[in-house]
Image (cartoon, rainbow, N blue to C red; front, side, top):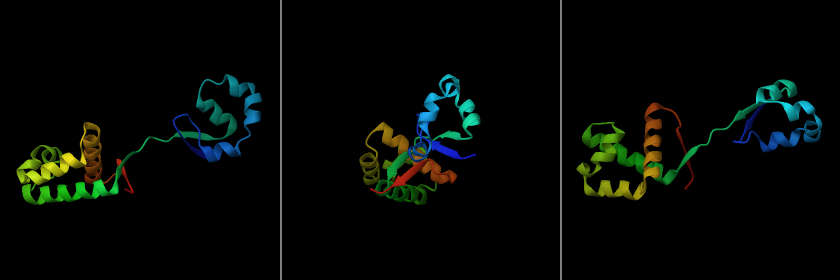
Length: 130
């Protein structure tokens, strides 16, 4: 059974092009089914929703890594929370660098998720060029 990675609406552009949508539109089953499972069974396909992916520019990720590594070496702590709240204890410049890199709450949250993902060994935030 082919697996189709889909967007939030359940569609993958490349796979959709391969399907005969005219037949689907004429099929009473297609128009009356209650859930994707019925469609998957009838048409021998599997729909998977692709989860949205948080992203962070590589330049910011690298700078966060540098700041975090400095914090770890000076404070002997791997606490991301501690880094964000005690950065000024390293020096004022570090606190200002963090404020510049993560100027609003959403960016702070993405920065936390990025560092937490690195600590856990999973990609919670995708690093992109920039």
